[in-house]
Length: 404
Ligand code: LLP
Image 1 (cartoon, protein in one colour):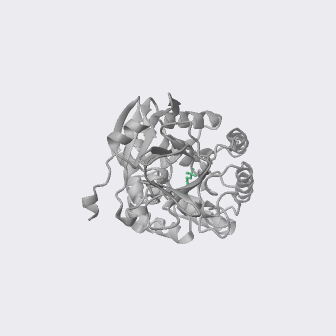
Image 2 (cartoon, protein in one colour):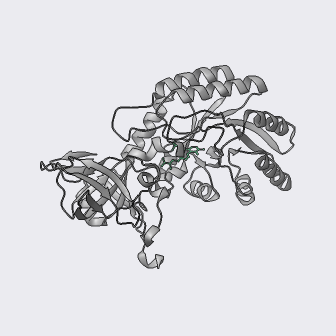
Image 3 (tube, protein in one colour):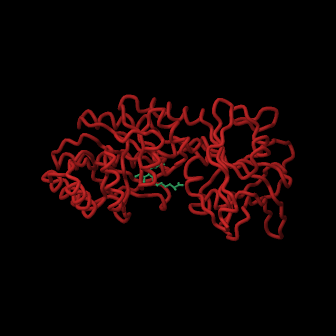
């Protein structure tokens, strides 16, 4: 994405033209950027040769999943819906892992039928349920156990998953008990030690600490895991302040870990693959100058992009057409929804905007559309993919009639 003669361009396509042709709000993804992200990811971890399973929850669009699958990634799924979609998008079962604390009997049965690579269980009850179903089906099922390493990922509390008080994974003691139970089971095969400590992690040290905890448990259990699934969580630079996760250092500690334990690594990245490849294009409906505050009222709202309302997440907002007219006023960029949290950002010194101007909210390819809703009976936006400078509608705008 760049400016050409002051017009914002996504892979050679003018944002204003897209807005006019497809109407707003709209999501637009760049396949070029997704490809670049995957190449970078592979490059950073080339010495480890991991199986990289895209976390479908970040963006479950079928066309995107197909493209991501073609680029060699598998899928990390957390529901039968995501599993079906991954399979339908051509991702092979032997590249699919199933995570989540509450897999139902039906979901486990379906996953077993489809012979996916791994079900990563998160409790004793789940292990017993998988065993029960495997016994009825007379099948042997590959399982992993997710460890809760009790590590602070130093990220937003709402997206931390690796501390004792979080619902995810099992304690070291339960892990050891479950492992010895599975080893004796006729229907379960223990294949994997899995962990996922949280999301949008920018500090490398929590990952390093996690590996130390994993090493300790492997030494204790004296079992050779075929896979160690390190989850996802790698953060991106939403605020453009140059704070970046040091992936090279992460890769080098993992390399030492593999050499010691002779295991295969699985990653489950979501955000790193798609976040910066997605843009939410929106039109200014009204500009409202208040006594205390000024508002830019957009046609996009928290139902389209939930992250700011839910986590106070920051997303850059930029104009589709650059001008030199700066304003000294502070504007709050908000949506039309009847909630005070329906705001995207407060910005000082933005260029002067007019009603009907187009703006772009950046880095929304992950957890943008996937967290969207029909709140206030607003139809979900259209999704576009730019592929080799051509636009493809990859999900139609919801029809308001269907909502009524
Ligand atoms: N694996 C597991 C088991 C997960 O729970 C998650 C994310 C991932 C992988 C992928 O994490 P990523 O690489 O995308 O950080 N809605 C929040 C993020 C929630 C993430 C939940 N789990 C957000 O908008 O920031």
